Image 1: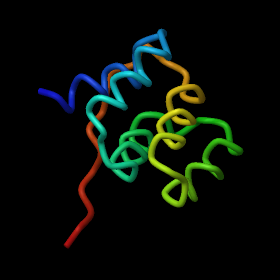
Image 2 (image 1 turned 90 degrees about the vertical axis):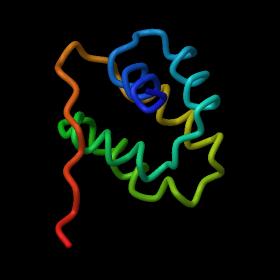
Image 3 (image 1 turned 45 degrees about the horizontal axis):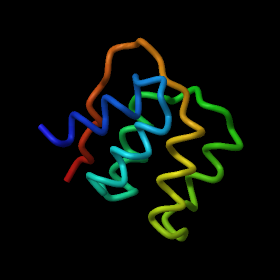
Image 4 (image 1 turned 45 degrees about the vertical axis):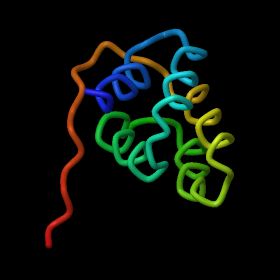
Amino acid sequence: MAVNRWVYALLKNPDRKYVLKQLMIEKPPVPLVVSWLQANKPLMDRPVWEILANIEECPTELAYQFIAFNVKPSKNRIKWPKRKAK
């Protein structure tokens, strides 16, 4: 259930400070957060995606702050990310 809390906050909650708080509490791996964004926010601005491509090199707290305040919430249905083929 914990995964759903930060995912729902990231993608749907308009209070971005709450989103940051949830990310800091749950501490999901940054690549996992990026995969959720790829599945749900494919039409996000190009400069944001360029930074997200290299965000794993940043400290985790800085990455969470960037993600929390640059992802805009929407009312669309949340899609689970696809698994890679083996």
